[in-house]
Length: 78
Image (cartoon, rainbow, N blue to C red; front, side, top):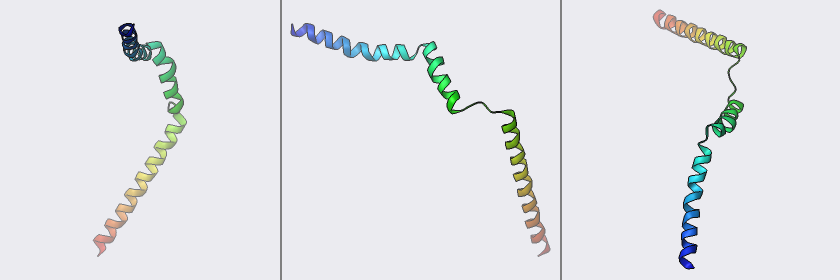
């Protein structure tokens, strides 16, 4: 009796992780839960939003260049 229980326990201990690994690696599961969740957290970029960010980066770049030019002009006057 004791050996049969130990064999059953060992089968449960080994089959549970294998079953969880098999279930979690199914392509349908991955598509349904993981990819949808990722798209909820990180939505695809909108073109208007992307354009606004690009314009902002360009303005900051121009502002930084103007500041550097002014600093270089002051240094050359000294």
